[in-house]
Image 1 (tube, helix red, strand yellow):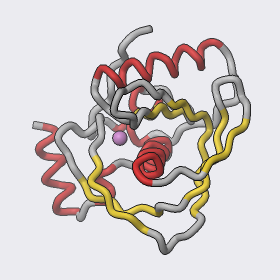
Image 2: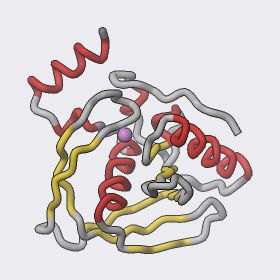
Image 3: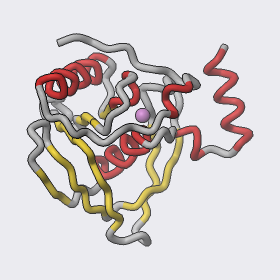
Amino acid sequence: MSIMKILKYPDPRLRTVAEVVTKFDKSLDNLSKDMLETMYAENGIGLAATQVDFHIRLVVIDISEERDEPLIFVNPIVKVLDNKSLVPCEEGCLSIPGASVEVTRPDKIQLNWLDVKGNEHEDNPQGLLAVCIQHEIDHLQGKLLVDYLSPLKRARLKSKATK
Ligand code: NI
């Protein structure tokens, strides 16, 4: 396993839309393990493949206090079950160090995904896990936390990031 380099905003590669995973081989398994190691090394709770310059639909998450509940999501798809139950949350991002942005997202979602072997799974995550998975799926679409800011605040953050 090895720690990977995380792309930092405003690197244009963070805007790449990720491809659907179709090969469930050893390299997918290895990449997800390296991503978990990288996420733990950086004290993050989630990491999308996009952030380590692999443009496939792969996300790793661990929201546990003990940092011992690694989750891997391949081709995750979120379906909003109730678009009136919105919850605001202060979110950070390993690709935008120091930034904290309040984002309001649906709390009642259905999540479908595959594991690294290609088996199908479904769950209805809530709370922090629901927030985190939606944040990571944004990455797979090339979308970043800064996109939720007003143009003025985004310009300020960008000038700070490029200094
Ligand atoms: Ni992020």
